[in-house]
Length: 406
Ligand SMILES: *Cc1c(COP(=O)(O)O)cnc(C)c1O
Image (cartoon, rainbow, N blue to C red; front, side, top):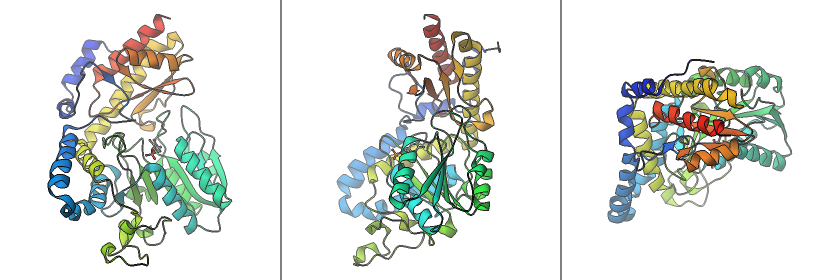
């Protein structure tokens, strides 16, 4: 049985944590609550709440339609912020718009048109449901084949498994960077290179990695990506998503929803669609201004914490969760259902147990909030800006108690 730190030891880790003060810049109305679902819905930054209030009272209330000059710049402005701080992308390669599902659809269709003549899309069996549905829906309409890499529920998949699905019929490979269930982290660099060797485009879903692990879109040569604004980034419920298009592709691919926010010289109200130069052509309709202000403030605060510190803390938090699972829970019929190698996982881990669904409900009743993810898994998300080491220790202690109590 591995050595497990004492509660006093992990309290000491929190005291020495350079991110400890960052937690105070979040709204935490119930300090007793142990919240381990920040990978589904991040906590609000105080700055995000203030930005919402300011946007409503000053920009909307006082500025009225005169505020549109500033608001119209927001999708690209927040896109550039995400590109620089979290995505390893260049300015002008990211824009914030719509939902992840809609962006995935739009970029997938654009990529397929660009690779017309090829009739296969590659994804993986454990991908997030909306990703699988979007792929199947597009494939059904266009009469394409879908190959799903048979991924391991706990370990994800190796680049070799992607390679086995590739040949010259594959138009697009679309995968999640971090698996929503196990937290398994895909090798973006290697997989992107393999897809390119086969002549396919790659479309990454970064929803569960953005804000918790380093991402290097430009360096890896990734073509396209989408991701969520309301998870680690802290944009709030319903925050818009982002999309990334590598600069060289922006004017070569055509997204399928032509709307007036993608139009050059929008307010000349031309009756013919002529897309703007650059990433702006991937916008469609009126942006959700209030939600963009919250996302901008939340992401700015997260970035200010220092991304290198965030990544390091995230690995230590999940490392503690792994050690506590091995040390305390395996005797009770539970086991780790996530990669053991810290370099192969994101910022959440799963614990598998036959009664996981009931245990999740019991934990929530007792003030610990994980998530249930079938089959038979408790999922714990560690948001590095707001989760303390002692939160992890206490949550595992409660779970150990529930398991021991039968
Ligand atoms: C959370 C998540 C989504 C959410 O999609 P929406 O359209 O924003 O609801 C999509 N894909 C992945 C991988 C996710 O984790």
